[in-house]
Image 1: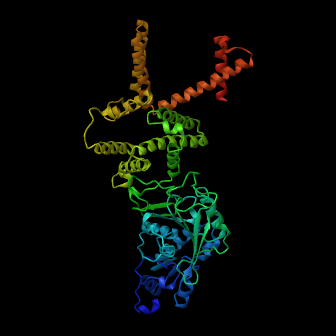
Image 2: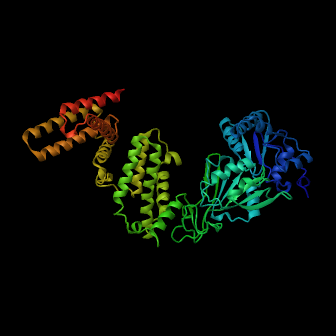
Image 3: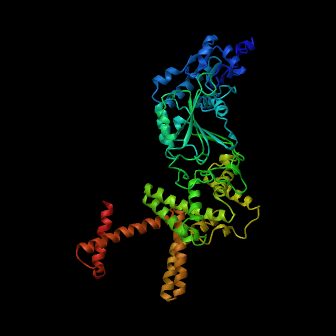
Length: 552
């Protein structure tokens, strides 16, 4: 029995916009609510007529308009979807509108997202009908178990929403060999060329369905790819590599147990809890428990595990948390150096070196069953969410001052409401002296112990300078050291009240000194003189030359 024979009652559309789905392509997959809406609507728009069910709708006498002309006229897909949104909203101001899209309205449908947002802004009522999506028939055709997590990625936006290699993914809108080529190139940055993928065309459509397993490298060689085509990309490590790649994953590491690219917590088995992740139009909705979280840091985590494992690197295996301390500090300062130089290529490299130290410490902790990298990332993610209730909750914060107050309040609540013996207890004594001085002053200023403006700090600076002079006149070396500390502390306070970061200012001046001194060395070599034999007046003259060159 056909859908049209099941009911003879026409149900008029409500005012505003009704959005429905036409299903994956077979007439039998259209829901009753969608069919009734199509029969009763007097103003129906289809996003496109390039859908297998459309010819059947024509035979059934359904009238509609399509937006295929926008695909031909517009320079890009963003323009197409924005044009559709404007047209649907404009029509809805006059009459009830039915907007029908392939599949399910909320699965990989950018135009629907734009229409919903515009309708909410302009006060136009909107109703979305559930429908069978292309994802449902792909899952059935490939017999996929989505319990361990499945990503859905728009192939036209894959560079903005690259799937995580550690989870399986369905890639949509691979509607031509050109798009297939673009998708292949993007995926090859993260997946091996021989990674087996499944190309699915016309899933669930009688006489149209075609399924083929091929290596990723051959994706753009299929001549039958069209607008009904999607890809299924298994997780890296879930399949045996091709000959020549046996035992290696994308990081070139042993893939022995088939779990490469996945980081399971202690006591967790592959395929335990998970969820479906829909990635579309720059947005990511993730329904997954913390236990099942996967991160693209997995290759680096696996790399450290290999280095510290049996047959790994002797040096890496000998390290512990304490022996790694100097390297952590060194890499941190090299990141700061790259920032000061505004060298983005160097910054990228140094951030990688710093990240390696973090993963190194997490690996050592995991070996001792304290925590692993999932705990590190999950913990900071939860903390940042918890401490930003004005973003992720119902709280409000009108400015950064209120954000700071909320932050400190939440931080205190996290400690069980117990107050520290001192407000300053939270400032680590292990910090560099300059940084610690700034933090101590900010803590004290937070409860009102501060100058009204920089003038008070300037007077305090002169006061401390006078006290240093008196200590020098007295010849008291210990007192000179104390007064020098007071003077430096007052300078830090003055910088804070002038909204100058003292560390940055001092680093800049140190670099300036290095450049000027290098100029002096260069001038000495040019004149054939030994630097230590030059007079102070000569050195000072070259110093002034270096300063003048900076002004040019």
